[in-house]
Length: 83
Image (cartoon, rainbow, N blue to C red; front, side, top):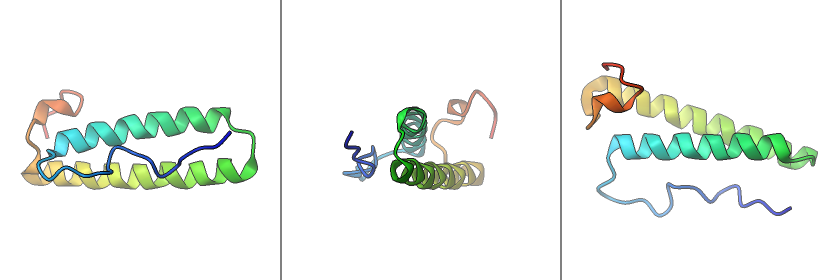
C-alpha cells in the first residue's frame, strides 16, 4: 500500500481561504489520517502517520488560537460554541 502522506487540502493554498475553511480541511485530513492509522500494519507507516496526526493537531490548535483572537469569519463553525 503506497500512501501519499503529504497530499492534503493545504496544497495548493488559496489566497482567499478563510480560517473556517482551513479548519474544516484540517479536521477532514485528521479524520482521514486516523482511518489510515487504523488500517496500516507496517511500523514505518504507523510512525509516519503518528507524526502526521501530531502535525495536524498542532495546526488545528494554531487555528483555534487565531479564531479566539477574533480572526474567525464564522464563529458558529466551531461546534456552535461562541469564541
